[in-house]
Length: 155
Image (cartoon, rainbow, N blue to C red; front, top):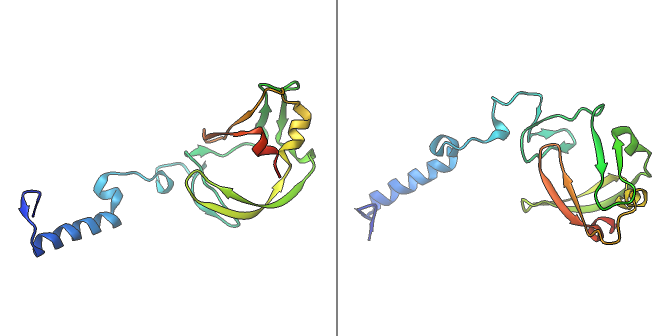
């Protein structure tokens, strides 16, 4: 059997195996792949993928942290009463907690106790159009996702 024009013997096999094992430990050096999560060139004020005590931050892209004084949440589209919440407004909604499994698009999941408000509370304020079926979300790091209304109001 020939690989790369060479007869496959024990010495050639071990050389290829050693090279492939080395690429496992040095992927960025061998292939020039940059892992932005560990990039020292990203300014420290950017929120990055790193462990924080009690909370694991995972972002799709590096981004500046959110300034809660300027941040807002807008609910608009197929609703009778479009609304914009300031950060502090969200604390006025009825607080609840539940244990749920979060399934990430990256194929991992985690079961944890989540606290906040039910999506139904927002729906009660904005009164979605009966023909509305989906909700589109976009995060501060430009990640976006959509869910059916049915999924979101289910406890």
